[in-house]
Image (cartoon, rainbow, N blue to C red; front, side, top):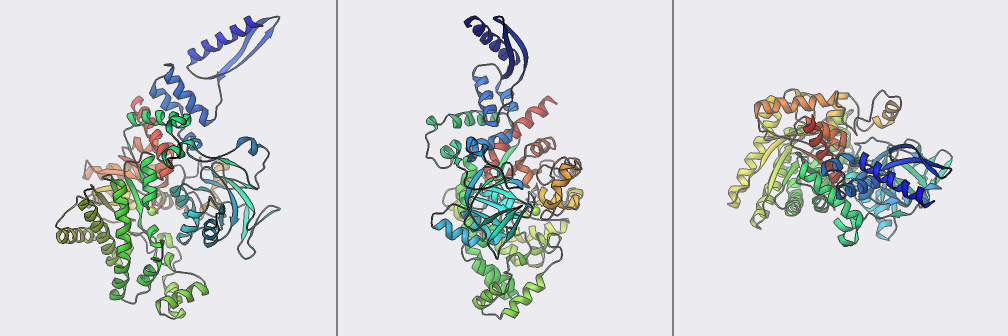
Length: 594
Ligand code: PEP
Ligand code: MG
């Protein structure tokens, strides 16, 4: 029926030109006559949405701005991560589902200890690290694993945010599994998984599978990060690059990254980051054997002892900052002072305590007593954040000296540096002043000794409701604000970021909450604090630079809110930088339209 066929093609073209979109049509041919029955916007995968939008601009059907608005920023995950081979996935059934904390697909043999992940990976094994929950001690094992699975914890738990920063696939808070470290197994319903068995994780959906499901690499990653593919040979990369170019022309807000290693910074810059919004310095405390000096500092009986240990730590921190400043090459770098409570750095369990005691020439009882004395009932609201620097100013001093010495060294190499020192968990202007005084004094000392000075800023995180309420007073002491929306959500809503994974999915299912507030900002409640903090801060300093470095900085609906609140930048993990660039462009267009 060539006539009907031609007629169908003509009508399809007409519909596409009219609706300026890819349509799904229904038709029938009866007695050789073509009848059109229905037409609507066609459903599409994220990947297809990007291709359709870009090609329609090239066909001059839609504008670049329309194309930018048409793509769900999260769809970029399908371009930026390995994904499962869809055909193979069809025949698989998940054994459990947790939180989709780090998107992409990963497959590997399961291990239950970070040290095993490292050792197996060193032998060339592909591993998935499964833990009840992770802690800073697990960082190297997490880095060695293809993916991370945790039984407990929410969207801003340690596992979730470290995995996103590393670009690892992560399923967190998977309460449907029961991990037994002593047996080296986990169970999911009546399925038993033993150490060494293959499992596969879909970090975009939270699904956990038993078995090895093949994955496909990302073309964008091969071009941008690994540099193993010629961009000319990578049609998907080309679509990505065009869309990102249009987004960058449009957006008002800057996009920075949360990163604390030079390689993470390099990835982020390749993804388009325009600076670092958060270096969590405590993440550097676990590299190599420097944890020994950290523990020596904590266990020191007096100031002199603490200073000895801090002076061992300082060169490590300095070296890290030098590496970061070099990679960032003149872009701003926000470095946050130590944040977690000190007991997080001490070992637990008889063997580890005895081991440390031996290394430091102490008795196990002495170490145990210190661990005991630092124990807190409610560590999230305990002796952490700037409260550490207030009680132990020598820690702030060491970190400031490491930052400014590194800055001077890199500047002397001819590389521009813009450090921004950030004080965490501030609740009163006095706290910020006390820390700011230490930081500025150390800066003066370092610059004088070096004969070179560097421009820098001292600012604060706004992550407690009181700080947002008193932002006008706090701004008197601050060159910039950065909203820590993880802690701000925790303290505004009274929800523990580490424990709420157990019940929040139920709240979302039963529509008591529209989304997990640790993932998408609670605009109604926490959002008010963001707006108020920004407004009040700028009442004192109209040009105050304001950003956000909580996990919401990489979540599209939150980014649109931050644009409306007048923030200058968002900061997110490296692999979310392109998502934030696109969402920020959409925000500009939406707010321009009103
Ligand atoms: C925050 O609280 O939002 C934040 C960025 O700091 P952290 O997650 O390290 O507490
Ligand atoms: Mg915080």
